[in-house]
Amino acid sequence: MPTALVTGVAGFIGSNLAAKLLDRGYVVRGLDNLETGRELNLDRFNDNSDFEFVEGDIRDRELLRDLTDGVDYLFHQAAVSSVPRSVEDPVSSTDINCTGTAAVLDAARHAGVDSVVVASSAAVYGSSEVLPKVETMAECPESPYALSKYYTEKLALQFSELYEINTIALRYFNIFGPYQNPNGDYAAVIPKFIDLMLDNTRPVIYGDGEQSRDFTYIDNAIQANILAAEEDATGEVINVACGERISIDELVSYINEELEADIEPRYEPSRPGDIPHSCADISKAKNVLGYEPDVGFREGLRRSIEHYKT
Ligand code: NAD
Image 1: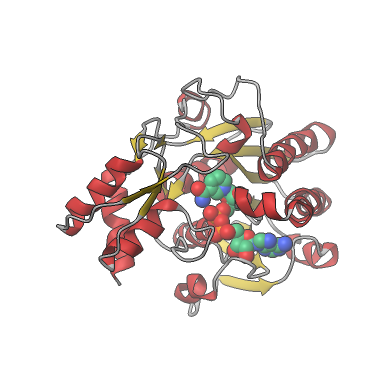
Image 2 (image 1 turned 90 degrees about the horizontal axis):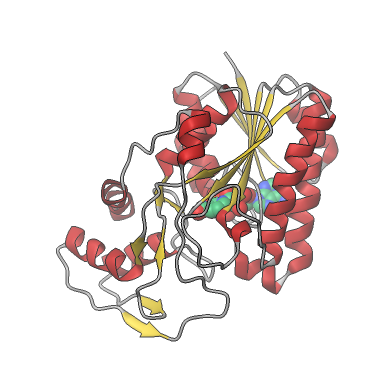
């Protein structure tokens, strides 16, 4: 039975990844300092003896030494995962995302971990309007967060050149689904809008609503992580998305359709740093990993709404 370590396990992506790994027969260790992660995301593992949760920080090198012992695959999800938060406090996001990643990678190579998959972001492409985003494009990180993700990728790939360790970086594009936190100033648009609209509250759209994103259901991102760990794709940076654009206006009308509601959004001026459109070229993920997004946007939205209803 392979053993996996998931950092950021109490977060949205980490907790869903842990669930899938356990389904596949992995033994899973999870690390999280509960900064933005939530214990309720871990409740479903309470009776699972193959799951162990450790509350702690990815910058704690001694702890990492213990946790990486005997690990086959490491999925590094822990991060300050918000652009505005990194703009407000660039020092802690740089410390956690850069120093923390270095500590995780270093522990992995000392422990002889077979493969490390690190979470990167579409934010590294910046705001250029050229679409779709292909991995061969020049990166243009425009926030401390984006820069920290660029560093995360580069350091991970450097480790595969310098040491005997397989590393791969996945550039996520707007992942959404169950267990994503709908509350707080930094909440992502889909859980936030579902939560508000379930409560019959009008969501606020910043801008004209025409801006669009490559919204990607969580199961697709998890599929990419597992393929990245289990396939031989070391040294690669790969987009994880669906390759389709959905506008924010469309998002609101689809949620209305699912809820059989007719809630009008409110429009406010767009915020500085908001990018108009984002969409990925996913050919590399298909060719290198054999990735195929199985769950489309509408089905993912339906499943998410069901989750938030309960
Ligand atoms: P999340 O905030 O739900 O999860 C991040 C987790 O990391 C949280 O549980 C948090 O408590 C934990 N964490 C933060 N600092 C830590 C530290 N110092 N030590 C230990 N744990 C720490 O975010 P998410 O959406 O699940 O994102 C997971 C990863 O994917 C992040 O690296 C993020 O940057 C990246 N990402 C996510 C998206 C998306 O659409 N959700 C898009 C691009 C990239």
